[in-house]
Length: 381
Image (cartoon, rainbow, N blue to C red):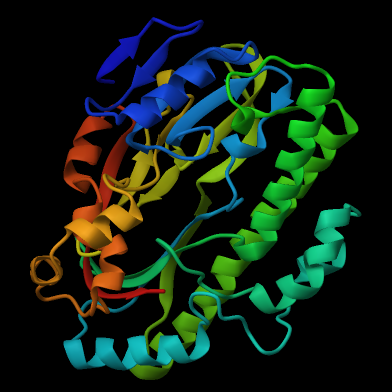
């Protein structure tokens, strides 16, 4: 931990020195919520979000805040260790081309319904039922923004596959639906909140129970979404190289969960933060072109057993497109097969993100690095 702020109702514990003004203001808003428990934990990849900063962790007494989970419910990482110990550039190019043929990117969906047992067990919640038809074609798709697929070389001597994706439009619609419900409830009950984006639902109300159930279902959908993509990608690896997967990790970093901390059952909101309980295996990706990490949690109670979910942005998308130099950013990707071809792609260029090595240094008390992963080939939607 780098410092503690004590100016608000409860402390704010920060694992970084250079928090941006907007994110700090949001952290202070969280610290002044009457239901926030113990303190607010701010991870080293923190940057401004909607209501709650991304890279924030908040435990609450008896309430759930939809915007403290985020609009991409269940967004997370999947990493697979393959049996390969080496791979050449031509093979990577073939694999990346074939991945683009089977994994829809950006706003693209599958043309046919995809199979998942979870579709047959969807909760009887209106927004879930309304989105099921579209979700059947969204399963196994990457999405846009900072979602990616990478081929990586591990410090353990093996080639890895890593991908980052979430619950697609399914989670977005669910998040928006319940945030509106939370705003209506807060207005109707005249609840005192420091910002409208922090509208909340008491967990024992019907809306609170429905959101919690819908959030868990969207998280399972997100997990299945990543699993289907990895299954399709792994088939390509097997067909091209004869490899198979040795180990796999599939985790969330946008969710809320009922947990016990300091002897009390609380609802821990992790928005752009990863669970790092003792010996829990996690994934912390870097930006395009930088290292990623397989880590083991140290179970630090000060962070509510959490760590960063990545490098974290240091500038907004439009600012990156305006200010970054395309040639300079491409030079940072020397030796990596990538798709950064125009200024439009600068919103996800290395220069738009914090230094992942500094981020990892700032959370040495939260996780232990097990494997360092160097990028070899990257797909950004």
